[in-house]
Image (cartoon, rainbow, N blue to C red; front, side, top):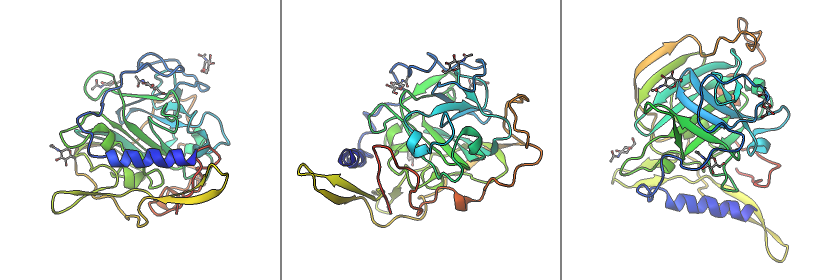
Length: 327
Ligand SMILES: *[C@@H]1O[C@H](CO)[C@@H](O)[C@H](O)[C@H]1NC(C)=O
Ligand SMILES: *[C@@H]1O[C@H](CO)[C@@H](O)[C@H](O)[C@H]1NC(C)=O
Ligand SMILES: *[C@@H]1O[C@H](CO)[C@@H](O)[C@H](O)[C@H]1NC(C)=O
Ligand SMILES: *[C@@H]1O[C@H](CO)[C@@H](O)[C@H](O)[C@H]1NC(C)=O
């Protein structure tokens, strides 16, 4: 299993920046079996739903993937996580008002993105879990979660998209749906999902200010880990993978792949414009709201010290068949 993972990661990286013309932007498959056939606003609230259709439309209308039940880490639940939406939609669960503590939405020419902070223990993320990455490929190629699909209506209609990436920890989230390509960058480049221990602020640079809610237009960032050089070429960082492989003779050996020096920051944080500021993001559904909205609980660690960090070892992605260790 481990050798397969390494191969997949290596192949994906070699192809990076060389596939803009072939790569697909919109998704053409059928929806996952627990999803409605299309994105739908105003569906009944069902807090035990297994729907996995995520929409990212605007600061007031988006969804996140999180575990369906308590007690299982992001690393161990990535194949079966479910959608939690700000608004009742997509037959999915609803994010109770008070969970989201900071939300920053940005619409760019190549993707839409939302990132911020919250108390995601209320969405079944284990307290202290630094989380992990979900995306449309996964180890089986069926996606993580399996049957997970995404849409956005930023073009004016609900469109299913092929490439996306989602990170969540117990305090932080970031989500990008790649909605377009240009002649140099494919949707797969901009949603490159091979840097899963690098964390939100590296992979999806943007505004991570706490306790604020903003919606902006923005430039598209360079793809995760890509650094333009002065001669016009690019340098691409590949996350270090260290794993154990079992040979046909049953002997195990340690294998390493990737760059041993980890960059400390993304190439840039893209400029934004036309920003609007809001006081909160929610749905106003009182029966779901956390009781602590007026006085946020003090046990929620907000500082980035507890969030996924570029140089932090991956601690919590384990127990699944893609088990790996990294520096
Ligand atoms: C809520 O979702 C669960 C899981 O998909 C389903 O079994 C149940 O019937 C749904 N409840 C309602 C009222 O739709
Ligand atoms: C939904 O996700 C499945 C994999 O889980 C994929 O095969 C299918 O193409 C996706 N459909 C859409 C419309 O995104
Ligand atoms: C996207 O969908 C939301 C909810 O249905 C709607 O309020 C919004 O106007 C739509 N945006 C666009 C650009 O169509
Ligand atoms: C494609 O988008 C990237 C990221 O915004 C940008 O740097 C590049 O100039 C764009 N390419 C073209 C041909 O517009």
